[in-house]
Structure formats: C-alpha cells, structure tokens
Length: 71
Ligand SMILES: [Zn+2]
Image (cartoon, rainbow, N blue to C red; front, side, top):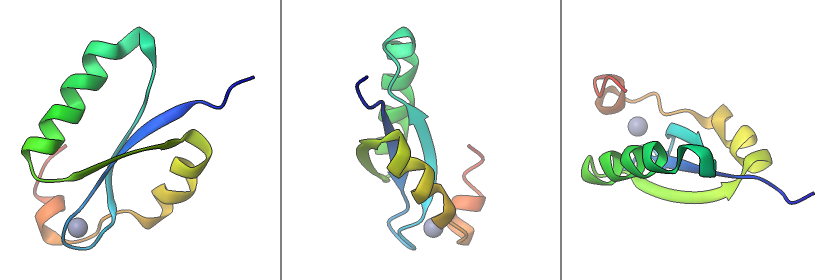
C-alpha cells in the first residue's frame, strides 16, 4: 500500500506548523484552495508523508502572528 501524502504550511517566523491537510484526490479542489490561501498568506508549503506530518504537528506554531490568522 502506498504511503499517503499531506501538505503542511510552515510559519516563516517560528518554523512551526500552522496547517496540515491530507492530499486526498477526492478533495483536490479544496486542497488546492487551502494551499493557495496559505501561499498568499506567506507560509511555506511542503508535501510530506502523512506519518511525518503527524510527527511535525507536535511542533505547532505558537507565535502571535499565526494565532491571529484565524485558520
Ligand atoms: Zn509562528
């Protein structure tokens, strides 16, 4: 079984994770929209395996900028 992938958005300031979303073909349009919004907001987007995304979630962004983002 192939490993599933997810997209993560990283904060430029603290390098923490502000968003993760599964790269699911069923929700391709939604995923593309979420990614585009986060790029517009100035986050770094990375595509990683779901298992690494789970580990990375532990390093959530905690800085003020991202808290006020509301997403
Ligand atoms: Zn941050």
